[in-house]
Length: 207
Image 1: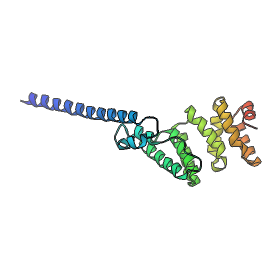
Image 2: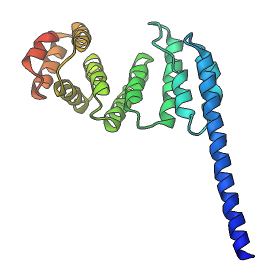
Image 3: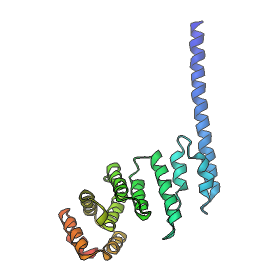
Image 4: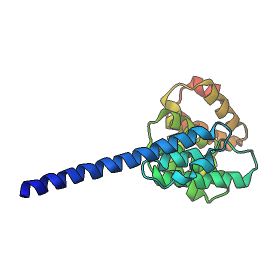
């Protein structure tokens, strides 16, 4: 009798686990089909919204709600993206890329400097050596130099020194430097030299 109960409970456990797996799998399939039906026309936001609280799908659903670049000056759309980024980070708090994106949106929407700096610090903490994020941080750092404390200025310099610059990075950095005062340019140059940015790269970006 005891063996029967053990077998019954074991079978029940296996069935329960299998049912849960099937249920989650069905969620994934439904999400994938809905996302595919949304097409490339930007309609994915409303289609994917029902899945934002589903375990295992929340990150993908939240990420799909984040639309492309908004028009310059569209404050409402920028604020909406800022909130969407917060939702993504609530699900995936170690996403260095999205912490940096949040820092940018916080800056554009006029949040306190301390909130911008906090997001940049978390980007560094969660992804100190991710190449694509390092590129973004160096450009962000030069663009928002006056806003950042010394350690994040030094971090921007270290990221810039880490690898050879691509043409797009050079163009972005030249643009970021173009509007800086002579005093700020000298500060940036001093930090970049200290962090070991090669002289040829300094010349390339406009020093």
